[in-house]
Image 1: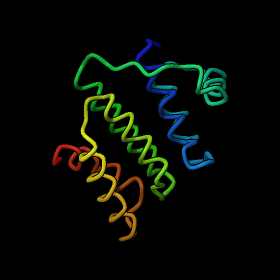
Image 2: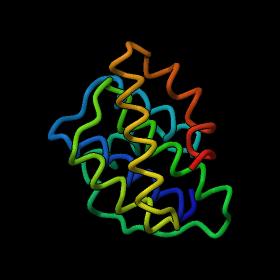
Image 3: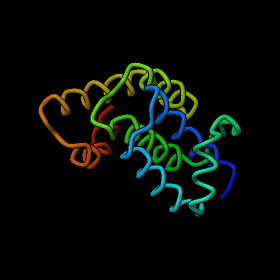
Image 4: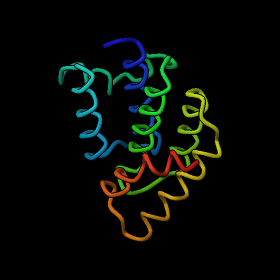
Length: 135
């Protein structure tokens, strides 16, 4: 796993904890992403236990920055709620990735709207690329 992936995985963990707790759906998403990145179950657990041990590294490619933003947004809505602390942290990470706060605000508002209408996190996740590209 390269330094960008380690950093991104730690950022996902930080977002999962931003609302004060980490729920089963967030753990499943972290496990899935961790395995895609080549981490063992033990490494995933160790990183979840110590997310502060890693620093943020900006990916060089635009496609990787977009992918990371997508996964960060997925993390904040996986539990069916979008908390203010999560959005604040997401804005911080999105800015570091080169995205404007306006994009995050607009996408977060749209996600909240979808959640209020009863859309599932999976359905919203399928729409995220379209939402991000609109802004």
